[in-house]
Structure formats: C-alpha cells, structure tokens
Image 1: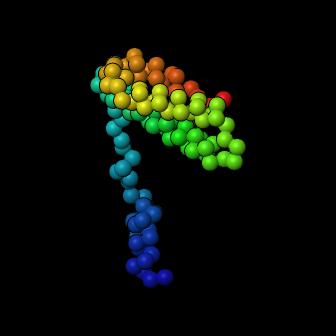
Image 2 (image 1 turned 90 degrees about the vertical axis):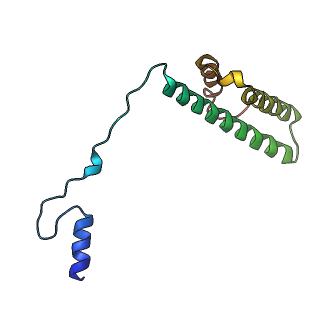
Image 3 (image 1 turned 60 degrees about the vertical axis):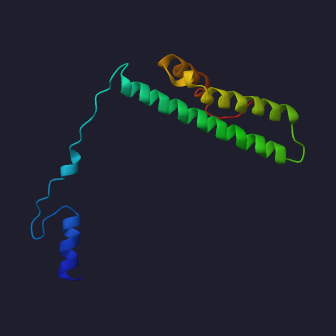
Length: 121
C-alpha cells in the first residue's frame, strides 16, 4: 500500500500520520433545542404527527380495500367498513378546523394512532 493511501486512511480514522494522537471530532457538539410547551413548535409538531398518522391510515385502508376487491371472494362488509373509514379520513383532512387547534388534533391522534396495525376488525 502506498504512503499516500496509508496517510489518507489514517486521517480518515481520525489520527494524524506518524502520531497516535486522535484529531478531535468537532461534530460531536450539538445544540439541543428546548421543548416549547404550548408554543408554535409544539403545534407544528402535533400537526405534522396528525397528518402523518392520517396519511398512513388512509394508505393502509386503501391497500386493504384494493386487496379485498381483487380477491376471489370479496367480503362486501369489510369493503364497506374500509370505504367508510377512508371517507371519514378524507373528511377530516379536508376540513381546516381539524388542524386549527391542539384539541382536535390530539383527539385525532388518540383515535387513529392507537390502532397501529391499520386493520379493520
């Protein structure tokens, strides 16, 4: 192995060539943001979580409905329940009042985030 490659790999390993002293890693110091209670960042965080949960549920319900519709013996009751759930989520996401304050968003999260499987019984 050439000297240049050895020197480069030593630098990449955090050591100065020819010594055993490590180069300090400047990326280790991080600034951790403080949690703002009932502030705009908390509202933003909750609204992002709510959108994520609703989009995840909508996607999983649509996949389940499509799979059930393509099956050889589709269960019409299950398809109807999935369609109702899809319509409910679309209705929630289309109304602005669902995301205007923390209370409706937290109730949406309690309702939809508790069922992590996405399956309708």
